[in-house]
Amino acid sequence: MKCRVCRGPAIIDVRRHNANFCADHFLRLCRDQTAKAIKEFDMIRPGERVLVAVSGGKDSLACWDILLDLGYDVDGLYIGLGIGDYSDASGDAARRFAVARGRTLHEVDLPRDYGYDIPGGARAARRVPCSVCGLSKRHLFDQAALDGGFDVVATGHNLDDEAAVLFGNTLRWQTEYLGRQLPVLPARPGFPRKVKPLVRLGEREMAAYCVVRGIDYIVDECPMAEGNRHLGYKEALNAIEATSPGSKHDFYFGFLARASAHFRPEAEAEQETLRACPQCGAPTTSDGVCAFCSLVDRAGGAVPVHLRPRGAADPATVPG
Amino acid sequence: MKVQLRNPARELDVPGPIAVTALLARLDLNRESVLVIADGILIPNDAMLPDDATIEIRPVISGGAT
Image (cartoon, rainbow over all chains, first blue to last red; front, side, top):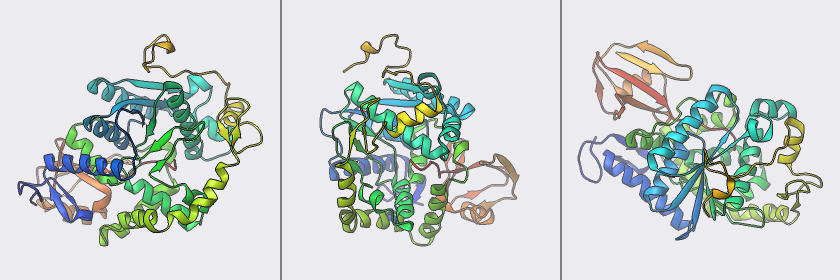
């Protein structure tokens, strides 16, 4: 295999582009595709402060790495989920990366700060662990970004993630979810802008990016995700991709270009019903407390948490 | 050849030499879902793996429903 750009020995094939790349030009591809997504969807503007949601996995660390290399001002936020050795290892990976790049990693720890972990939260709320995890992370990322004065929350969702979610939402015609499946969710009262800079890059590319860059990410799958529906959707889509390269890209970007707008009125109508949670002030469609406060009430003891860099004694020292 | 797999972690002995694509087909693995790595270096799909190689086949699919 030869690199499409320099004709030197290639290390990876990207069949969606019908091309092979050497290490240097593969890294350039990843940066260029990220920059293209940021520009195409107006994700991040010059001078804005970005908070990247870091799990210790390949996508979030690659996202942080690429955004830094593109010149953005990016801190990380890691949320300790209390999932035993998995959380210990993922937190260590996030901290190692932050130290190596000389950037600030903010941390929230669910058991310490909110009195519950994901397995316990799932039991108390009678929801699947991935649902409780997603609910917790979305709330805490929003809160941390607003408290810390960040303009944007960036997540490491890649093309495979988005195609799999779209596949699941389409299978069940969850039109409300389809209406808000966008690479950018604009800022609204109580919500920071949320962006997905890696939507033009596949999951295999993000793993390869980390290997080439020497980023030591947590490879093992979350033990709570076993049997997760989205993992099955990804495998199904990859079976299609193997015989028809580019299918995932066409599915997702075709949806954005030709179908997404049809579902937006329903999602926007829901936004008009938002009110402030009487407990934490976050926007909610509930008549009572928001879903996160309800989870904390059921699963743990609510303890106020403040955004702070790891090891800092005083939250007031957080820059910005 | 030693082949290290994950989720669950296990090691297989596979006779070489063998092409990467042939190895993945033999193990019934989708090339879209894995990387082949040796000594921290990506191995391209057209490479021939010698009998004395030690390689890792790393899954790339991850993530929950967030």
